[in-house]
Length: 363
Image 1 (tube, one colour):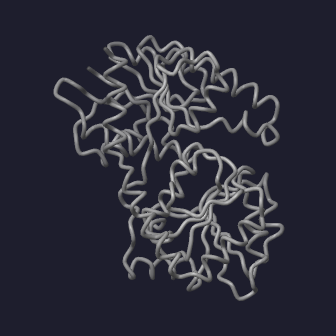
Image 2 (spheres, one colour):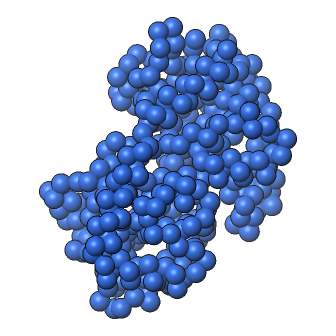
Image 3 (cartoon, one colour):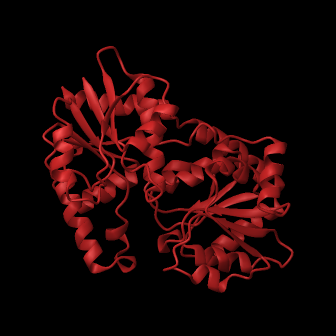
């Protein structure tokens, strides 16, 4: 049984999907039974990167064709000859792979938030998603919320053809030592206490509301630190932020993220929509109290280990921020609950459940 996992999304263009694929590949290799083999399909650079991280021998199919390149439609199927199964972690894929196929689905942002996406982009998403679903024998969704959205986008899809399998925080996300926190604090010139946001500034992430809520706190409150890639198309959060109270760090070195989470007074994630919400789970794994939106997948991922707020209500977020400031016992309680909640997720479990789908489809 040769299971082919497409790893071509391990690029800076796909930060979340790339992390999912990297961790899944590493975990799958450790869970295979005799007679099963994992083969990775990607560029030489991607395969070399993964081979250095995977402890078990894996096969390799070299493919430098991007998921955005039409030529993948005939190049990838040729490489898949003889494979028992093909797993695409993205809906831009070969639509006639010629092998039993699994698709991973993350979210339906273009359909749920049409105002954020052009009509042309929405149509392209819908059409290519339909093609991907027709190609797939089975769909893995990363949350029940994402599965619900997929049903809305493809009403004919049967429940027997879908499985929800959660991801997890990378094992390196854990409470960090005082020395590691001090190094990151010095590297980024961070204040002693600060609220933290990690992620993009895309509209559904709701950064302007976060900046507005923070501005309503007393002037001597901890600063707000915003880390992650910046899309110049959405400048509002920077435009309304007080530079004396809000820091924009830009992209952060992956190696620094655990200590950055650990250094924060709290992690604040008022997103309107998440397919899974990995940053909230990473923060909890580091023992950092979390405030997040009460919509989409976030409640099912964080459970009772976070303060949930309506992401459309700036006053609710102000109140939650002030509660954490005023109540050290609550921060300690959320920290402990967060560690317990994060421990319920693991990539080993994700791999075991994914392999069960592989075996079902391949047989």
